[in-house]
Length: 241
Length: 283
Image (cartoon, rainbow over all chains, first blue to last red; front, side, top):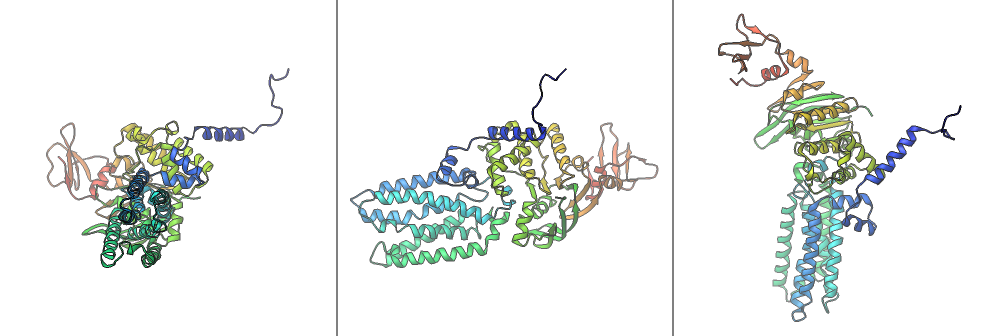
C-alpha cells in the first residue's frame, strides 16, 4: 500500500518555515505613510526617509516652512512696494530652515531622544540629515516664492547663502545650548546684523550684496568647523537635551 | 558573540553640589545583574554612564576593552548595546512597528528587509507581534514598557541596560517582563535597575548602590545571608533596633543586634538590603 501523498522532491521543513516567515513579515509590515512615500518617490532611500519622518516635530517644521514660504510669497507679489517686499523676503527667508532645524532634534523634538542618543548613528549625521531635508524643503517653497515675485532677479535669490549659513550656525550653536535657544540666538544676531547694515549703508539691501554673501560663506565654513570639532556633544544626552 | 564585559574604575559624576556617583568600581560579564537602590541613589546616572550617553567626570569605563571616551570605541560599544531608559519617551501617534523601525535605522540596520525581520523578531519576543499596526498611544502602560524593551533587545545586543523596566507594571506584566529578561541572561550581560527588593531577588548578582557608592556586590543569597543572626521577631516595641516594622499579627520584625533570647528568623534579601541602608524605623 502506498502513502496517499508523497513529495516528489525532498523538502527542508526549516527552509519552508523561513520562507513562510519572510512572506508573512512582508505582508504584515505596515505601509509607510504618505509623506514617507512621497520622499521615497523623490529617490530618498528608505532608511533616510524613516529618520526624517520619525519625529512629529520635524513634520510640524515642514508645515511651518511651507506656511511661511507661502506667506512670504504672497507678500512678495505686492507690486506697489517691490523693494520693501524684497527686503522682507531676504530678511525672513533664511530663518525658515533655522526654525525647522531647531524643531528637528533634541528631547523637545523627539520623545525617543534618550533611546536615540544611545544608538551608534552619530548625532551630527542625524542632525545634518534632517537639516538637509528641512533646508531642501524650505528652499523649494522659498524659491517658488522668489520666482513669483515680479522683477526681482537676481537679488530675489540672495537669501539662499544666508539660509545655509544660518542653518549651519544654528547646528554649531547647538553644541553649546539647547536647539531652540540656538535658533533664537541665530535669529536675533541675524536680524540685528541686517538692520545695522541697512542703517549704516545707503542701500537698503546692502546686507545681501556680494560682501554680505561672502560673510555668510565664511560663517558657514566656521560653523561647519565648530560643529565637526564639537560633534561629540551630539552623542551625549546632557549636551543636547 | 559572548556577553559583554563591563569594567568601571572609580567612576564619579557630579551634578552641581550633588555627588551622584562616588568612585564606583565594577567588573561584570554575563548573567542578570540587578542594580538595587533607593530613588536618587545614582542608579540612572550609573546606567547612563554605562550606556555611554553620559560622560563621567572622573574614572573610566571599559566595555569589551573599548573606551567610550574615544569616538570610534563609543560607536562600537553602542553597536553591542541595548538600552531602555527610565522614561522611554515615545511618539504616541507612531505605530509600534514604525517606532521600532526608526530605532533600528538608528542602530544602523539600513537594509529594509533585514530591518523588518529584526523588528518583528523583537515584537514577537515581547509578545507584541499582533500589535505592530497599533499606535503607541493606544497601547497599555505594560505594553509600552514591553515595546521599550523590544527596542532595547533589537538586534540581540550583548549588553542590555534596563532602567526600572518594571516601574508601574501590574504583577502579570511584571512576571512577563521577568521572563523576557531572564531569557536574555545567557546571551547578554543584563543590568536591570530597581528599587524593589523582590525584583532584585531574581538576579544572578545584586549590586546595591547607596548615595552614589556601591555598597554590595554578590548573589541575592549572600545579600540575604548578611542578615543571618540579625533578624528577629518580638512582641514588645523594639528599642535600639537598626530597622523595625510592625507585622500583621501585631508583633515587630526587627533588624540589628538582637537582644539576648530573641526569636531569630531566617533573613530575607530585603533584610540584608535594609541592614546596608541608614537606620530605618517603620513601625
